Length: 216
Image (cartoon, rainbow, N blue to C red; front, side):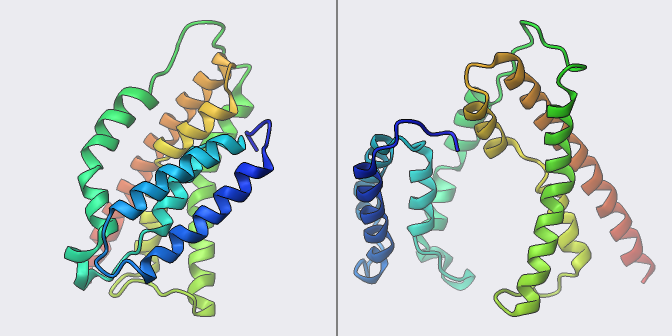
């Protein structure tokens, strides 16, 4: 949706590299990281060349790294990478790059309220609704299962927390409103407001749930 000057050659190469990435787990018995790094870098170059936003290569790479069950976490390559990069991604990339909000220019929230309202409702209501609906349908048809000892009320609490939209919400805003400083600032403010509302709602639900449990 946010791409331009699409190159078919780059897309074809990206598809081939993605297939190879998802096939590595069948040959990489020792679960080494370097094949994923080499092919992941090549995929980034191919996706960038194709004209599609290169960040998608990171998403594909993450999906291609095998995830083991909880009993084998010490051998889980995905788990190890996640925690080794946690400090770097959370506090350096996110905190210092993604959250800058410009309050200069013709910032007028009264004029941009449809944009603000859409983002806030999407995060505070849309995300929890989608998670609950598709989670329930997934359990209903048997393609997934609810965690042990967890109620649907617990799932609702987590769904509400999903409204804390920071990373991907700000990323989408950056590429959707590229060059539109006012709209980008409104979008970022809206994401922060929605995150705050989600935190408050989740806290209230958790408090209510704890009181109900104590009464039992």
